[in-house]
Length: 223
Image (cartoon, rainbow, N blue to C red; front, side, top):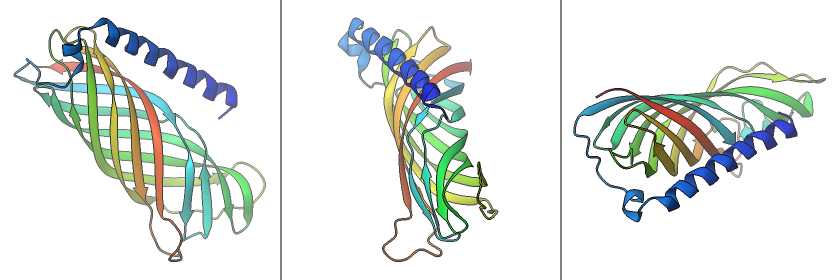
């Protein structure tokens, strides 16, 4: 991903953050705190979005290599069943992540890897009628699947089989309801993935912690 592309995405994140904060200041304090929604029925929401994720280093003992992940923009979609401002759902995100691979046959090589994340979610703070701006708290648990590791230059990287890492996530942010059936959100989340320990020495870390700023849009399909 080019530096220009990353700067453009960051500009978008900052712009939406500024708008939401300004709207928060314009609303009464009572509209900015958690509380049960006035909506008593169940609702089905679908959402989609993207964002900006930081990288990190991941040690892979099977290939005896280290993956230094770069910055990337995952695409995410989710389905949620909501009741009284709280919801249970399922989210899927995907990204092709740029990285620097350091291992046998390819030292400090530019490469890409696919990251597919599948996660059950709990969301608190959907906002109710008359509550335009609101806070959001999210929890998630599932797996991150790494696959299709390929070199982008000279050097040879051995083919890998899909590798699933247990992943936990917590996020906090803000939402803005634009009517009763549409909302926009900005959420900062932190996730921790636990990689396999095969081939790693006792002192090598097998966890990856990442921070992601997500921008999303939500659409309510029913009551």
